[in-house]
Amino acid sequence: MNTSCIILAAGMATRFGSLKQNLPIHGKQAWEWVYGACMEADINGKNIHVVGKDVKGGAFRQESVFNALKYVKQRRVIILEAARPAVTSEQIKELISCNHSSCTFVFPSSDTVLVKPDVYLHRAKCFRIQTPQAFNVKVLRKALKDGPLDLTDETRLLHHKLEIKPHLHFGGLNLHKLTYKEDKTILETLWNKKKF
Image (tube, rainbow, N blue to C red):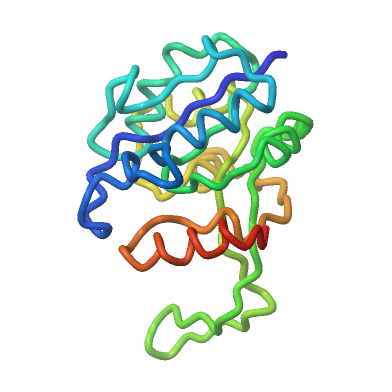
């Protein structure tokens, strides 16, 4: 399999209030659930790079990705977040089969989106970008060539630097992100009821 995985698990989690990547959930730390899903998707363990554990984290997201890419030898890379511990091996396999330069999961917005005090976006036209995301390694390295940018995800980086639009895959409630303390309760409720 010509695919590696990068698991981002080095953030300070200031909004969460503690290191969410190490949050115990059903007997494992959050990042360990993500690692396990990669293994279940038949990713070789030596091709799974955990930023913050076996790879040094950066000052911001793209710097962490840049650091981890130094160890990637495969043609494709899937970037995952420890903050989304309920990711499934099936979702990872779906991205393995995506051959576009930039692939991401998205979920429809259930809320009206307010961009500025006078700019409203209709929710039917809005999607929340989720991870994991998959990329052509050569293209991702090209986007990072002039140095990492402090952007919220790598699909945005490729669009900003190379005008590459992401190929969209429908995500799920299981990809809910641990951002605030309340998110732990939401995620555990979904997990217990298997509503994803």
